[in-house]
Image (cartoon, rainbow, N blue to C red):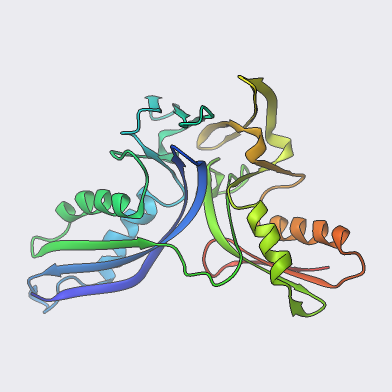
Amino acid sequence: MPRLFVNRLTLMDFSYLDPELGLLGETWLVDLELEGQLNAEGMVLDFGLVKKQIKGFVDQAFDHRLLLPLNYAGCSLEGSAEAMELRFACRNGRHYVHRSPAIALCPLPLAQISPEGVAACMRERLLPSLPANCTALQLRLYTEAIDGPFYQYSHGLRRHDGNCRRIAHGHRSRLQIERNGLADLALAEAWAQSWRRVYLADRRVLLEQFQHQGQGYARFGYDTCEGRYELELPADTCVLLETDTTVEHIAQHIADTLAQRVPGERLRVRAFEGVDKGAVVDV
């Protein structure tokens, strides 16, 4: 039986909660293979419909959301479409509290978020909506192959006019740094390692900092046209910027900070946001 395939159909920039590691920003690429009888047009499914139905579903239901493993015992979710409260306790006792409209969350019947588990959930929801001649669907979710430094962060852009306003979505991104016109892998790797699992936040949306059972926590919040967003998480995972956490400001922050550490050097910072996009700053 013929199979249609589309490599890199779309990508997902999102965050998820892990029982061991807590809040992680991530970017996954999506490959697709669709099996079925040929229709009257001699196709399994028109590529235009693949983009409309399958890519559209992934973009709407998973991209720029916080993915939750509902079958993990430390995950609880309650509320309404307008205001959901998520509580998540890691196995090490650290906790997260997330309040938002339901549209910012993607709860899944999994004990732990993984590419294979999420792909299975997607397939179960997608296949019944496809034309009857489509009999099998395979999805492959995977990270970009990055030969060099990369960093991972979660954030939210309160003033963004789209889905980036959601307070806990994220990215897995390349980081390239040049010093005096030459790539400085050591400088880039040191920075990338320090930002491997961080939450980047605008200091202006910090609501409070407090101690709970010997652990410091920070709570952030802001209002948007979608509704109220709040996030409470361990303070030692947070990096505070004096600006919005757009990739342009991120690149500038990295460049300005490094310029103080290596004065007199010409620096170029190329900070990616997910795959194949980002910002460049020279100092």
